[in-house]
Length: 387
Image (cartoon, rainbow, N blue to C red; front, side):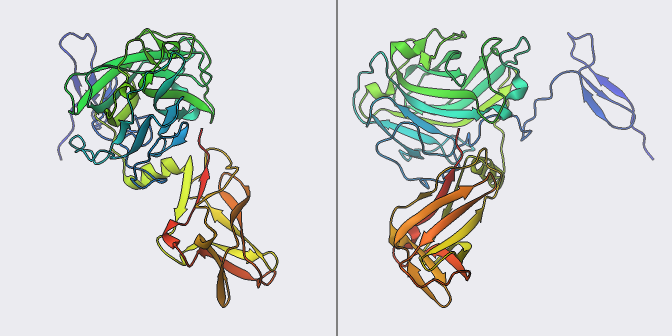
């Protein structure tokens, strides 16, 4: 039987061993092991833009401020109708190894006012960045990496900021060639000041700016005690009619090195997104949503179990808004609803919903909540626990 010899490996300029294997075959590292595959490094969810529960790849024109389009990615805009947004909008080929990206197109040549700003952002839950220890003397350095493409060239801006906008770090990156994917890296020394939530509230906000006025623009590469969303002098995408901005492969990780993008199985990434938003979509007419019981002759109450524990208790129900999209079947017949489904109550693991028809239910009898007899493929039920 062969034996394993203890071995030390060290850099020529280092006085200590960088990697050690003992006689049992165990390996230890003197520094950080930068993994080339998934090791739960990325604090960004849906950084490769694969998950789009709300729009299923449909471009939305125009983008509405503080609205989520791709999962976990929110549009921001202080003036209406300045850009459109969508998954794979613009139909360009993504970088090698990616199938999706977030795409923006400017709808006019808009001059951004001093107190205006435009962009896309991700609000990162405090529980997912609590180990960074920002706001303390032990604040960790992080590195942001991403692929970007634009019809414009020049210096572009973005920012990392805290929940209340009292601390921010404007950053810049350069797009050298128009209409070409380029990978960018930004390293940020962690903030030793300010308040950074480590709860299920907003821990860190990452912003990619596509236009910001002087009020929201500051010196790049330094922490500031104010709400900067971009860097002074950054290119304004909304300032050029028809200008495009595409981004994917977004990763925020501890350390000074940008490691390869953390690949995840689709179902694992979807589950991460469903902590913040969950939607049941019908694929056609008469598709089931939930089992229920008849509360009286017109109302049925159903319970939907969420596939993962949500960040917080949802307080409303989203639906398509058309009564013909929804129905109740109570043996042996079914009827379209007379009003859209209504929210009753929820916890972080389930929600109670009410479906209403004209008459004919029997109190206490079981029934099924389902899509209606018309335009069933347009029916959905959604719950949000977004930050």
